[in-house]
Amino acid sequence: MKLPGHDAIARQAGEHLVTQRVRLPRKVVERPIRQVVKRLLMALLVLVATALVVYVDRDGYRDNADGPVDLLDAFYYATVTLSTTGYGDITPVSDGARLTNIFVITPLRVLFLIILVGTTLEVLTERTREEWRLNRWRSTLRDHTVVIGFGTKGRSAIQTVCATGLKREQVVVVDPSAKAVDAANAEGYAGVMGDATRSDVLKRAEVHKARQIIVAPQRDDTSVLVTLTARQLNRSAKIVAAVREEENAPLLKQSGADAVITSASAAGRLLGLSVLSPAAGMVMEDLIQQGSGLDLVERPVVRSEVGKRARETDDLVLSVVRGHRVLGYDDPAVGTLQLTDRLITIVRVTPGAQTTPAARQLSRD
Image (cartoon, rainbow, N blue to C red; front, side, top):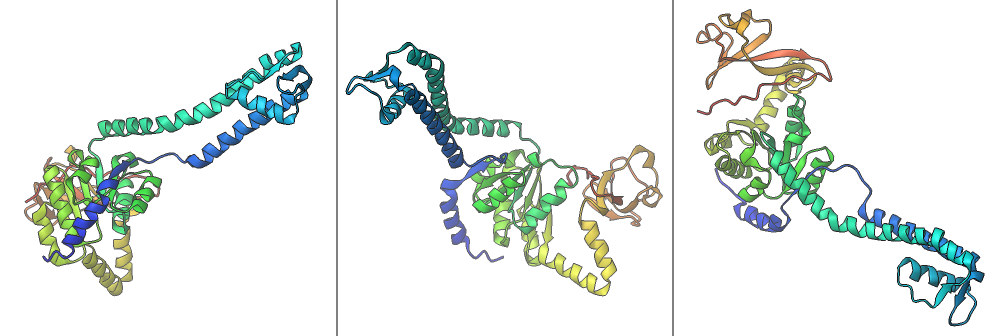
């Protein structure tokens, strides 16, 4: 297979090297600028309130420079008092003014400091909290699903897998686009921004601890490089990759993919089937859309089914998985079911119900 654009991939990797990072989904909160502006307005309100208190009780204060205290002097006194500067040029001299300082201005000073210092501390500790959250995420992440590429294919793959019961916290998206990673975060998935052909980017996604990897970038050559890199980092994970051209599927198999989906050919076959039989096309569309109608499910053989034939079970069995072989239900090699077999069946589900396909991997040839 020709690999055009390899130099372009290398240049892109260099561009994203400084921006690689893990982004965890967040709760919707106010923007930081809006929070700072809100706190500044609160501090200004406290300052104005303090100045008004001093101005109303201005007869109890004395300005060492010119005697009486006016509105400007009141704001000046409020500013230096709340900021704990305290030049001492304007002082309370009457008992009432001093009581006001004790019970009103001092609490306002404390409130003023809480607002400003709290904002500063929040800014300073944000990075620490993020690092703690990231370290905790890394330490608890196990047997997760890594999705390379958050385009149409990657997004649909995640939706299908999550429809079977996979938690969003167990999905990590890797994409070179910041917008795609932000979109993944908005849907509740952790994201890593960077070039997935680089091993350091995949390590940020904890690929070496993943159970399954979905490779769905936009280019076939990228799929090959990502699959090679991912297989080197994780020898046991199930890797499913998508390609556009059918001629590239064998190369992906050689690169370490357990299963390869040819998106262009699959879409073409579904189109052809729908032309020949629109009803059959609808059934196929229903089968590949998890969570409602008819679903394809892989499940283990239960003890009560051991010794029976595939057609003697309660479910509609299409195939029997025995070892690394997938046998049709009518294949003479199937014979009777064994306890180690797995069945590919069709089940009917209702919206909201979940079918959980077994996560046991198929051995590679």
